[in-house]
Image 1 (cartoon, one colour):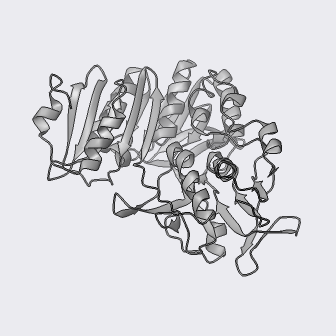
Image 2: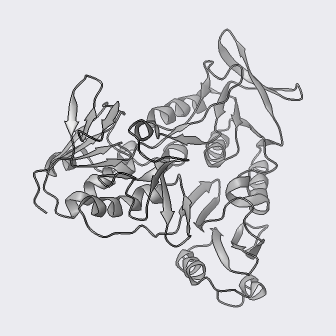
Length: 406
């Protein structure tokens, strides 16, 4: 495609960089400007709580592209550059220095921000969140010196940091308000697997516990006080209670938003000249028949190809099933599909639950497979996808029987 029109991408994570890459892969030869408020080259985020935090991977191993790629592909990459406003009528974006950039098509990939807690001490020194490579670098240094770490939240980030901390011989206490880790993501059946996993590695896991305050001394965190008055002493506190999508820019520009930026199956927003991808995209999913917003790596990796096609005026639909993965201690897991909290009938386990070598299937009331999770069992995600997409009832007993192929 030959074009003199400028395309602009706001957000320099995996999703933003992949939009720029996909535009060039589709032979778009117009101007591409990629803006990120971070000072680093665009990078993938999963290693920040996994291999990078554990010292097993270097930063340049998970940047999306090296610096010469942006130069060679004529992508104007602007680091440390935030966008302050979008003027849809003028089709410009505003920068902090008062200048503006015109766009013909605009992609929003603004990501998410860690949630904090409205409790005393949440803004003290030695209280951390994890989102950026700078945050991960801070935690790496912390794990070298701290003896005790308190983590508020037993979601993916909290559990992955706990695993890295235990491998660094740091004492870890996790405080979680729910009755199981990952309750919203996996439900109580599989949440219990992760509870056992972490307790088996020496984590003090406090479930159904409320945090009243972060205890401080001289402005620095020294522990966590629970609702029952007990105190967990710690050298540092990590708040890992989820993230909120960065939708302010879109909302202020008058785009339709709810729990994210509302997009259709092609990832177009309520303005046909603007697409949204990654953590902020609340998409009308054509296969699931509902709006979903998924804060996982696979969306950031795969949505940009569809968004770029949409920007170029091509027909495209994002219909991949949600997918995510985790690595904690000796447990590796992949999850495929989508189940809203409580919207399933039962979980069928195929394999050895106690040995943590199994596949779990979430079934609805009609015995249709909604999602599947393989734990230390590999090369089965394609088959899980087939079962989900078929939408047909399955024989649960046969599904659980390892002597019968599924």
